[in-house]
Image (cartoon, rainbow, N blue to C red; front, side):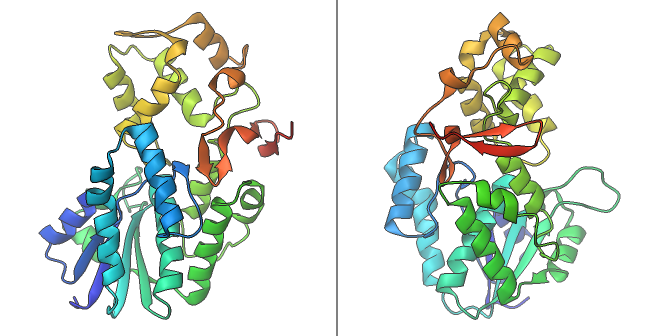
Length: 314
């Protein structure tokens, strides 16, 4: 394994695994969650990082020091790694990873022109029904994934950058149309991730998106003794989002008025009616500062009958 290789990983767990297996080369960890909060297309710019810090501070109480130490220092290390024969991206199948992957490729397109870029992406594993993350792979499996990594052409990188531009646009309607068109894309899991993204806009039926409805449904159909048990169940059942516990906790807190208790977990009558589409929660949950990529979350509604987004014009 060539020491002039630069690995860019999806998180610390993958980085630590590669180090444990003594993969040679430099390793940079991409520590962001660009599937949440406002994003701009100019990855790495001052405006880009300003929006990211404001979101993380306001939504997750991330301090400036933590943001600098955890995210920006690693990004600056990436900026300083200019002489690599190959850049290998390590990302997974889920929405969380796929959006980060697009952003990294957009940055590489601009700042590492003509570099050899390849992709290791985990998901389907022979003999397993469950899609697997990189740290879940055995040593043999991860080395085989690395051996079979996909060399990305300039067209592939251009395509990833274009999808990123659409994700960062102030309307998701073009993304909704375009993401299905490239059937020859090497990004095997990107279409399902974008589909999961579009389902995060509020449903026309009750004003909640797919994730928020799954929270209410999980609470209603299981006997759970605490919020932590609810989060654990959501983490276990998720298939395409790749969210962590803090993201589910944030979403649950947005819905707390629909619960009478978290010890044990019980929906209110209103929560049950909203889950059953007898009431609509849109006007109460709407937040003008809530973004999904470049689009305001509550400026669009997902029509469950047509499976298409509608823009709210008033």
